[in-house]
Structure formats: C-alpha cells, structure tokens
Amino acid sequence: MADTTARAARLERAAAATGSAGFDALVVPPSPDLAYLTGYAPMPLERPTLLVVRPGRSPVLLVPALEHPLAAGSSAGTLVELVSWSDGADPYDAAAVLLPRSGRIAVGDELWASHLLGLQAAVAEGVFASASPVMGPLRAVKDTAELEALRRAARAADEAFREICRTTFIGRREDQVAADLASFLVGAGHATADFTIVASGPNAASPHHEPTGRTILPRDAVLLDFGGELGGYFSDISRTVVVGEPPDGFEAVYELVRDAQDAAFRSVIPGVAAQEVDRAGRALIEEAGYGARFLHRIGHGIGMEVHEPPYLVEGNAWALAPGTTFSIEPGIYLEGAFGVRIEDIVAVTPDGAERLNRATRDLQVVS
Figure 1 (cartoon, rainbow, N blue to C red):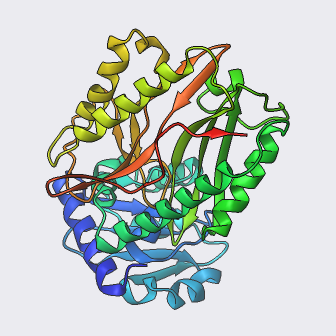
Figure 2 (cartoon, rainbow, N blue to C red):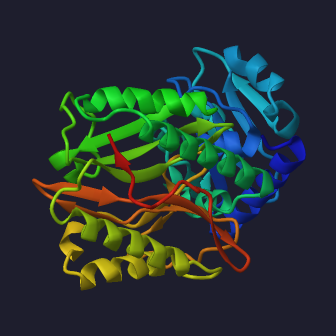
C-alpha cells in the first residue's frame, strides 16, 4: 500500500528511533515489521533474512543468495542495500559484519530463537533486546492511507455482521455459523477470514472459545468475534446476539457492557494514557459488581496485525496519539450461563476518536 517515498521515510524514522531508544542497531526478520519498512514479505525460514537498520548509516538487507532476485525485484530493492549469503556459509558471520561488535542491538520480536542464538554467538559482546520500543510506536500511529485501509476492513466486517444476522441460528451448529461468517467476510472483500469465534449459550462465557458442534438453541446468547485481512490490514469486531427471547438477566448485562464500551470510547482523546481507556470502561462494570467477570484488557492495537501495540491495559501509560488505532471490547462472562462482548475498532483523531466499525450496537434478535 505504501509507496517507495513513504517507506523510505519509515526507514529514516526507524533509524532515528533506534538511536533515540539507546540502540546501536535494529535487526528486523521476516514479519509485518519488515513489510511495513520495506514492502518485502518473505516467509520466515531456516535461512535467515535480516534487515539491519543503523543510526546514521544506510539500511542493509541480508538475504539468502537464492532469494536475492526476489528481494531485488521487490520494493526493498530500491530502498536498501542488498547483501546475500550462500548455502554452506555462516549467515550469522555475514550478519556480524553489518552489526556493531559491541553495544545494544534491538531485534524484532518475530526473530526465531535459533537465529537469535546464532547472532548472539557471532556478536558475543553485543547486548540484545526487544525491538518493541522502536517498532511499536512507529507502527502504532497510522498514516492517512493506513487509516483508510482500516476503515475499508471495518466496513467489510460490518457487512458480514449484517449478513450473518439474516441467517438462521436455531438448530445449527456453531461451526456451521462460523463457516458462514468466514464466507461473508470474504464476500465483503476480505482476502482471508482469519478468525470466526461463534460461542453460544454457556460457551459464550469463554472469551476465546473455538466453534464446536454444539447446536444453537432458543434463548441462547451467541457471541460473535471475527475478522480478517483486507488490503494488508485487519478487521476485528465483536457483537453478541440473542436467539429469540433473551436468557434471564441477559438484557441488563448487555446494556452494562454497551455502556462500558461507550464510556471507554468517550475517554479517548489525544494524549490520554492507554490504561485510562481501560479504567473508564472497567469502572462501570466494577461498580455493577461484575469486575471479577471482566477477564481481559479492554483493547489492543490493530493494523498489519490483529494484535499489536498499544495494549489498553492497567499499567500501560503509553500516551495515545492521533492516528493510533485499537479495539475497545469490554466483556462480562458468567460461567455456565452466557457471555457478552461488544467490540469496535477506534482511531484517535485530533480532537477525540472515530469508530471505524459502524454496525449497530443495539441488541439484535436472530431466529
């Protein structure tokens, strides 16, 4: 999606951020980080591909010789210097030439342990640490094109929700409804449907329930959490519907979760700490006596990955900047009875926040 100019600017920011974070070099393996910086997205393999970014120096991409033509033909070929190594040679010795002999080296979180061990042996005096302090803030703030990509993904997920609400739930299995959801996501424009949680009745009390062969019954609450990739960026939405008449106590819990989500959304302004959004939604649930049944953080960042920084959780004082995108998804889970979660993707704006998901949050009764 990003053009060469945009990626060159990202590489410059990554180099500056590496230095500002006190690192002498940044090592990026095949990952969304590599795709974000260079547009090159090879598979992670036993043959290491490593982007080395150093403050004040040009970036270098170390690639296996057999993949050199692929890298050269990608956008990376015009952005970075390519250095290849051949089978039979030691790739870590080749990487060591590009790295400081001592000092602090940031490594991407998706670097295989075997490759990290190889680098540590080759650069014995180096101190290795996670690159999250460098790459997390860079990727958290989306540019205009990224925000539009996330809006398109969210609108497509909204359409999938509208479609699933028109189908029959009673008498069908959770996995059958999940298959429909996946089909609707792809039909609405997603390249892939990456997850389709369908949790009915007591299964809805498990936040990450995997769809099973359980038959959906009248009066079941059904928690739907689904999303996928569209144009390189992800959707993620949760809604809870009810099959016919709600189970006892459900409507009050549903309204509480919706109010908590609204409170969290209203708390979002530029500069607010991530933990304050969690606190804003959690406070209502705790006041109502359900604090112990809200089992997870209120949200996570989203973009080229479904889960990425920032994480909206107690203890995270990260100041949210305009362009930051994340989920707001409070939930209450009553074991043996039902669960309720409502989730939208939100973007921080210069004066507040924007819901990227527009699907109704009113309780939907399905047949």
